[in-house]
Image 1 (cartoon, rainbow, N blue to C red):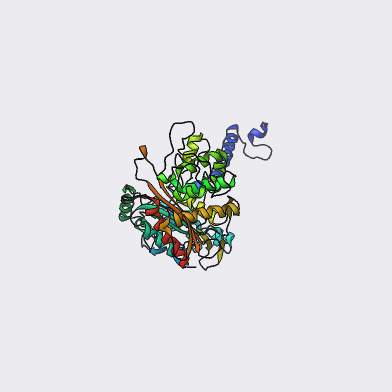
Image 2: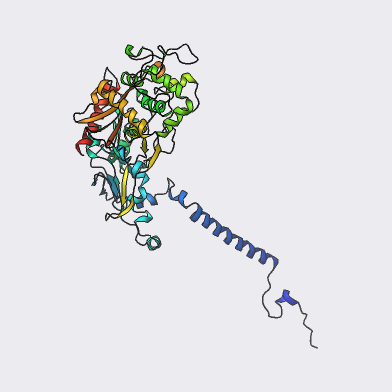
Amino acid sequence: MRRRERATGDSAGGPQGLPGISTTGRRAGTFCVLLIVALAAQATRVQVFQKHELDHNAANQRLTIQRYDQPRGNILVAGEPVTGSEPTGGRYDYRRTYPHGSRYAAVTGFSSQTYGNTQLEGVYDDLLSGTDSRLASWALWDAVARRQNPGGDVHTTIDPAAQQAALTGLGRQQGAVVALEPATGRILALASTPSYDPGSFAGSGAADQQAWDRLQADTDQPMLNRALRQIYPPGSTFKVVTAAAALANGVVEDIDAPTGAPSPYVLPGTTTTLVNDTSACDRPNLSLNTAMVLSCNSVLGYLGVQVGLEGMVSMAEKFGFNDAELDVPVRAARSNFDTAMNESQLALSSIGQYDTAATPLVMAMVAAGVANGGRVMHPQLVDKLTKSDGSSVQVMEPVVYREAMSAAVAGQVQRLMIDVVEDGTGRNARIPGATVGGKTGTAQHGVGNAGTPFAWFISWARPSGSDAVPPVAVAVVVADSDATDVTGGRLAAPIAKSVMQAVLNGH
């Protein structure tokens, strides 16, 4: 007798005889699909969204190895390299060299296998290391093939004669010099002392670490870029800004006419008299010209209050104060002029004291703006970027920063500065065969003004008889000196003079 087979449908394999899929199997399959999706999402997050963060993670050595696996592009001054590369025979194929030692450290910054990159070495690291896409002839193919191009070069605006004059003048003193070309904003000198040799710690060995540790422990802070990254009370050099504000706002119309300033001048809302450094200032109603020649605190403090807070803030900011994003392209520290003050504080701020503080860069912009007929140009440290074969990647053009004042007002301020050099506190900046305008400053600081004063001088110069825009403007600060007579006229003016002469001699 034949037994009838029982049909079981799909659970027995179905009519096609295929194996069945249980509920557990379906769950396992779904779980695998989710794992694949999660894995793809994670890979996308890491490789796309976190690429930059991981590339620049301190623990990732790939970029450092890539950065030094070929000679680095150079930073140039007047067409000549002030950097180099040498083979190491070690983990990193090449290390950075600085043939001039400390001379251009404030310009280049450093490139270290251990401690990274700063200043121009950092801003243009991609170009110098050869990874900048602008260096590639076939960018897409280079990216696919992961081919690294030869490093490009950075051509600076620095005048080697002006740079050397600045460093020689500063000597072993703590201080800084910035020289600008007023018509373009090109930085002709950028010096900070004491300085350091960036090549002393460019590698990754024990000697490099020891050199770095010594520099970090040095109380003179040789690695501090005092020209760009340190602010100081500008003292009486700020009176140039106050004079410009008084003229631009109609508080003073004639620089030789009486100003109405009282003597003594009592700070508003107080019983405190704003004292002067010379008794020659202790007369009422002095003219602006006399007040600038004698550097009278009472007159300029009074005029700042007459201009008012809004007018003083506006003029200061036109010269670069309160700008936290002033790039040259290295970022400069923010120079400060308070935007909320009472009148007594405003009077002190108008003579460069109270909370007013500036980098040498910004004070050079003050002098350059006056010299350039009231137009302040954006300071720039780089002329152009090129490939290794010399072809241009980017050429920098002059850019207007702010229109600080009219040409007529600038002409009046120029005369004030000329008279300071000819008849006043800036006599040490006189140059035979040149017209020089300047302003001295001796800024008190510290608790109870007990610190050694900061000696300042800002100036500009042009050949005598010329009506052209002066080719150079300078700011000098001597922050710490062994001299017994610490004044801007004695310490800072001769340094400015030597820098200006170096530029004039090259024209």
